[in-house]
Amino acid sequence: MKRDRVYLSKAKNFPGQDGMTQRLLAVLESSFDGIFLTDSHACPIWCNHSYEVISGLRAQDVLGIPMQKLVEEGIISRSSTLMALDRQCAVTIEQTFTTGKHAVVTSTPIFDADDQICMVVTNVRDISELISLQESLDKERRLAARYEQEIAIIREQLMSTPQFIAEDPATLNLLRIVGRAALLDTVVLIQGETGVGKEYIATYIHQRSPRKGKSFIPVNCGAIPENLAESELFGYERGAFTGANREGKAGLFEVADGGTIFLDEVGELPLATQTKLLRVLQERKLTRVGGSKPIPINVRVIAATNRDLQDCVEKGTFREDLYYRLSVFPVWVPPLRERKLDILKLAKSVIQELNQTYRQEKFLSAGAEAALLQYAWPGNVRELRNVMERAFIMSDAKSIQAEELAIVENGTLRSPRTISPPMVLSR
Image (cartoon, rainbow, N blue to C red; front, side, top):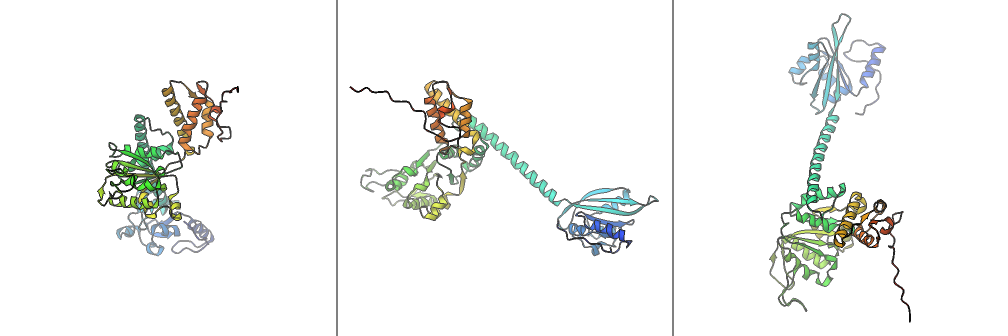
């Protein structure tokens, strides 16, 4: 509460006008707590500015009016002063004023030399902010408890699905978020760097959705030739173009009917195909190339990109309306360098797979584990798998060493140790 500077002044309706009284009043007036004084008959004789601010009452509305009357007229809800006079001791209550402020009110009786109450001093402390903070804290605790419960469920699910590897809190939180989206048919846009595991997230969503028993069709939009993108996605009728199948062909959207289609690298689609994709998303119908009959489809769409689609929209290479249609539920997959706890678990998983495949018993040394954690992994999970497979091949012993990972101390990657080709003697 911001206060102006307090000066010495005479107090109305307060006994005593000497300099000491003025100084004491200046001290009381400077208090951030409300201070309210009554005489021995519970008649208010003085209050400071803070009391007016907290209670919403003006001094002229209460001074000189007995507390009992203020209560009876509903000006205040209850009086700790009356309680203190009745009990002959200090009384503390909680009170809510018309200003909406919550306060702890303590009334303390002051006794004279004859052991008689001569006045009552009431301190009014505004605890509105404390209550607000407590409510916020309680809310955060409830959210944290719910979060921990959801994470525990995810961990339990991951134990039964070993193909999904997640240990870092950032990854577990991402799975918690997309797990909620999985229950609805909302379009999800997965964003992240190359090799970060976007298809992994898309698969996770599908397997926890009501469509988990149906098809999951991944489509690499960047690998489809531009002139075939529309026919591959939406199909074509016979004779639609030169070289077309005589019987026509169902597109990938039709193949995924009832299930999920995953449009990876959706930012690579040509503008003409983007236009038709937008119409399919809006109408839930498609028309094959060379056809005229709309075909109803029931497909959930999950898209992914490593591009900044907003930047693509500004450059005119991606439709703005399609961007907004795809980004109903956007999620960002953190890069591997921000998921340190996932690195070793992923690396050990790859080694375990290779051991089972080739009947080996190789493992990572402590030095190799440290090197893995130091590296920035610009290629993310895909690069990690490649490095582990290469190290598995290059390792002569069961223990894979740091130098066999081709990672140097400063965290930059270098070419793996090469094997010289056999010498060929000329004749």
